[in-house]
Length: 154
Image (tube, rainbow, N blue to C red; front, side):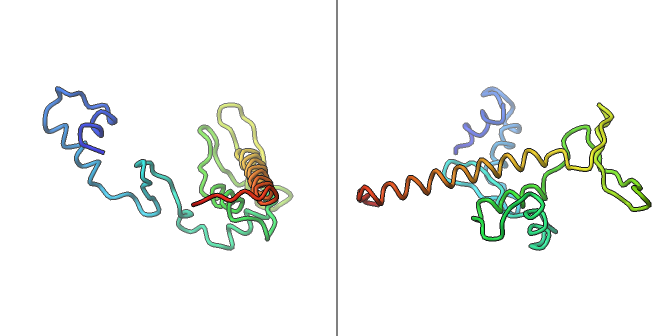
């Protein structure tokens, strides 16, 4: 990507002060944050789980979400994402006493709703369901290709 393209992407107008255009140059030359990579299209994506999301925590989250031990790593990425997901706007995590025991609860300041499940649990379960469906579709397509006997040159 060239400086002019980056400047336009950042919303810098052609007739802006040259010092402003240095922002575009800095954006092009700045390294990505740890855990990020740039693909050929210059898009960025997060690769690594957040700091502190140890394997044990990922395992526990996966089991909580219903991921089986032998499932594809593509499915286990959902557990990693769930661990690093921030609360949606307006939600707060609180600890309440339930039968003398501390219980983590989630409270929506706007609606007053209080619940034990993380507000994004259903989102991650749906993401997991879609990923499983996607993997199944890809496996079926691969099997169909093998059965037909088509050979593709790579």
